[in-house]
Length: 268
Image 1 (spheres, rainbow, N blue to C red):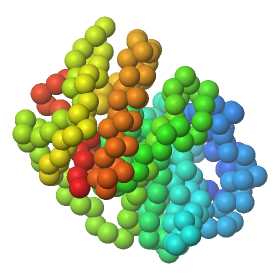
Image 2 (tube, rainbow, N blue to C red):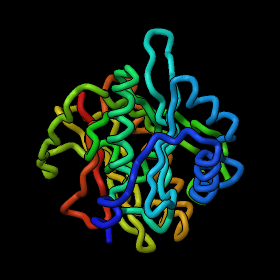
Image 3 (spheres, rainbow, N blue to C red):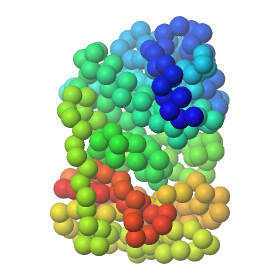
């Protein structure tokens, strides 16, 4: 099924109002009607340096990626604002395909860098962004979007990693790290069947550091919301501390020694 979708799926640059309406409908399904981008904005964006890519399977829009121009006062770059996949077609590699097409089109338009944000506790996104694509996290933003009411964000601060992805550089090789010899910054345990965060250590410094996170954050929110909040607070303290000192998050890997745990790799 997966191979059939990827081989027959068409990714194209969305430009017509009719197609933008399809994107808006899918965006409302993925998040909520209140958190969607108005069609008037997306129509203006694609006329002024941005673009929207749509993934179509049997004439149905099953995924999209929305980008607009950014400028930090020094250089222009492409802001990757959102990527959404229809619930019936997730975990089939569509998001990765959209990101690679985004990179190609960004290069054609003259961009050197693509930047976006994502929740560091969403490991599916982390695996795609850092491990598969080779992007890096350079900053941590607390409550980046304020309170959101969609199912994934409701009730918890919208903290985000800032990710940078070079358009022209080759993907760096993921490094195999000996986890047993690395410094782990958050101790973990289990409670109510959930991976729980324990004591943190902000004094450790070595060539590489690991920050553990759960692989099922949304399930933890449903099972024990207090534990979910602890994960947000503990990881916030660790990431803000080290990123402000020039460390960069370069990868996300599964911990082979503990089921359900992932490890972010911090490097100087």
